Image (cartoon, rainbow, N blue to C red; front, side):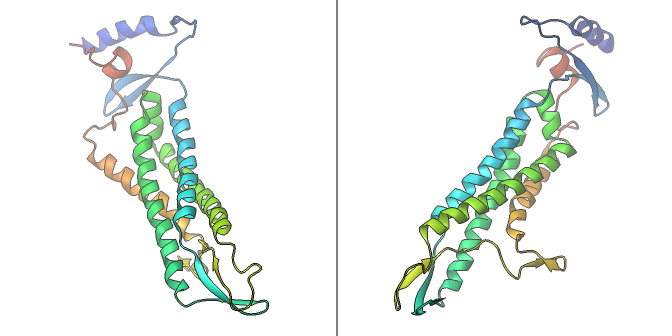
Length: 233
């Protein structure tokens, strides 16, 4: 009875013109053993949130460029300069600040994409394997752009020895390109760019595992086809 009622109510909607003359098309999907009807509209909000994730990475880089400490050095001879011993600590501080910012960035990106997806198409896109892969790519791209933009800002704040004279102190910008870093037996100076995607995956896994619904909240036949609150009997 329930299936016949849903089909009867949905049949007139298929191909119906709305007020603006736009033909609505519907795609049948199955979640947790139940068949629902999902609009075949593109996940516009999901793609916009993906772009926002990349832009958020740039914001992370700007914040790092403003917060990061400079490495202090001194000119020891004409044309020769060296960093002081305490610069090692500040080099670590710079890397730690960027790593922490990227961790927060990754978690915020995952939770933000999950929460802003409102339509069934957006939710189905974000909460699918394809959406997860795109989230990883977006956070990697955002981290890389953030490191580049942050480096430009840091170099503008700490130009280095430049025209400093013998005996003068100067500040040099720290680098996020970690020479000597390795992973899986290969050189990995870019290792910091994976902090955000790893944290995003962990946050998304926690949300998925804590979700009580089999369809991860994408939608059911009542919510997608009939509208929330219009249940069949």
